[in-house]
Length: 445
Image 1 (cartoon, rainbow, N blue to C red):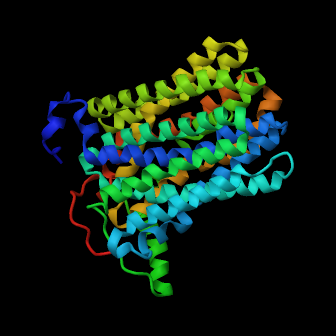
Image 2 (image 1 turned 90 degrees about the vertical axis):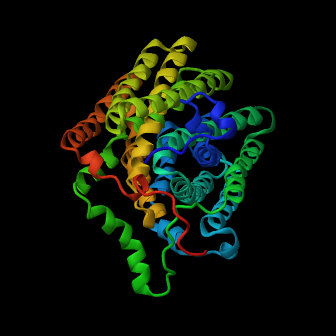
């Protein structure tokens, strides 16, 4: 589909920048801000909080199992597609769900804020799981809203803007939690971060219901509910080569996930202070990720979907070697900046290309459910391995050999996507989200 010609102030921008300044990609940015912060609350920030509280490594890495709630979100994603909440007739079904999910994630973050890991580790784990469940629900709605808001020709720019927002939201949450906690404690730090749910909620009110949303019938009986649950799966597996696409989804990010969720443990053991972490991990990482997203957009435009995804897969695999080098070098600000910079540039490129591909895989009848399945599957193996084995592997082999293993773990995903590209399966796997133009919403509510 040919992009719509830029008008008004957007026409004065450089051609390469114009796609990012359109209304839908800008909305994707604010949606990304709110999507990123719950992840930070139960990710690196909670890892630092637990490590500074004297919790052992095996227990700290086990907390990453809270992320598995994100991998189960497909179990209730069909509800977001099919159930109309009160006021949906006035605001729209996606918008009302966006507001409800935002309220839930604020409440869950405040619950985690008052948890005390030293006094009640089980209670803290429960609060982390609840935050993960609320964040996963927020993600279900945000992802569906984003995909349906964007035209097919905007998926690359929209994915890039969403990743910009996600990184800004996660960095803002991580930085605020660290800085506020230094003077006012972790409870205050987490409470401040809860405000980051507001951008997505405001975006829904401003933009309204997506034009490409395909309304599905109300769920009144067991047969209809069963069809709502199985329909997204049945549609996906009717496609040619669906099992190869699924295999790629499951394994492509194993090495990256396994490495990323242990970085803060490495920094803590190398003696980096909170200030150094904010400066090098958060600061350098933030700007490097933004550069990566820009490069990802350029790669997506010039190389096309398949070749740009392949490039990002190789970069993400090789970037893990930089942390093996940091582990061998020891406490080095330059080494930390280099490792973080490389990893975040690679992740930024992948954030544009891979997310655009996964978004395009969806059928607009099942946007919430199918993207929930895809995004959940994309990291479930890595998160499970991190929660069950990462801490023990680090203690047995050391950090350097551990990061070498994460690089090797990335190779199966590269091999599968190479075959999909050579066979033409990548192009044939695209769903209606990657092809259908914008039409009016097909029913009210």
